[in-house]
Length: 256
Image (cartoon, rainbow, N blue to C red; front, side):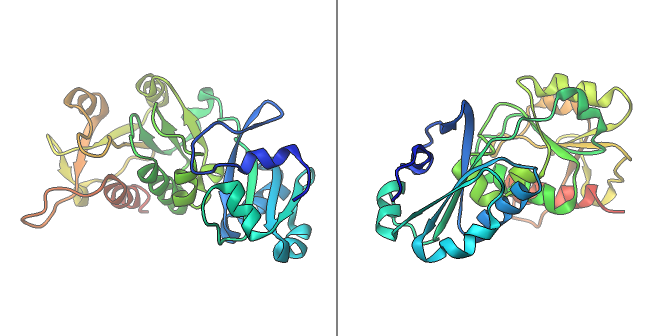
């Protein structure tokens, strides 16, 4: 292992401690697919990659992929496992600086928006962001909740966190009202007072609001949305995981 202060970005990955470099918070991507994708975005100037850690046998293949300013660190598998704090078999890790979120003033530009006011689970967040990116939504508005750049969210989202515009707001409902001001429909995923998703014809500007796993949106929050949609289910099944429900509703929202 080389002597570099950047090694600290990869230590004890099991723990969600803040990781900083040059005064900026960083996140870590693991595995060849995610790392190569992150490096491509780094070469395009979309993400600032600080360092890549590779097993010695992978270093020659990684070197040509490095963005400007990224440092390549090499180690044995045993050294990587000691550093990360768990058995590590993926061969590659990369640390990059968390992008600055877009300003809330730009939120009205989004025509198809996913809104997560109070999601509580990082894996659900990652799955929803991955689906939103795959279907071509214009971004997501996130309230207080799990960090989209946490290890679990990054792994599940497959890089959607650095591809999809993510607006952050302490009061997402106020931000949503600003989004709605130029005209647009805010739709809640809820049962009470809802129409089936098959009857839903999304407006040209639509924001889909999903509540946390379990309780969902409160009645007052549903009322603030203006419309509610539900997914009809077979007898004996009362609910879907929020990520699964969100995927169905986002697909409907993006239908031509």
